[in-house]
Image (cartoon, rainbow, N blue to C red):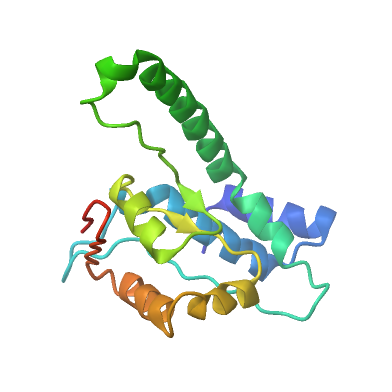
Length: 178
């Protein structure tokens, strides 16, 4: 199902690193959806963006995390580039002091995150309209965070994101995001 070159990479990772083919192929599918983001969609019968929720489940020692880490390396390189760019812009903004007071503070661009609250994710998505990937190497850690602030709040949040529903976030002391 993949282009020949990608099939060759998957086969090579299996032969040389013992990465399971199915885990590697799934990880590449996830990475491709993050790379494409909201830049691509199918418009029939309705707009559908590349949205992949990927959970690789196997017993301990079955080389689950390695294929995912390999597949998202280019995305992590984007994140490093965006972070360096943000640091430069922020340092310049800080240096201008009062002169920059009426200008918006620089915002960090990202392509993926690992640990984030729903509120922070909403703000980050607002400033990254192409979308983001949320990479959690351990599925159990993702489920454990669901009740850290309010019962079922994070579960409901992720169900809405899976359906590509709009989310409106309003906080007393913060900016509104939709």
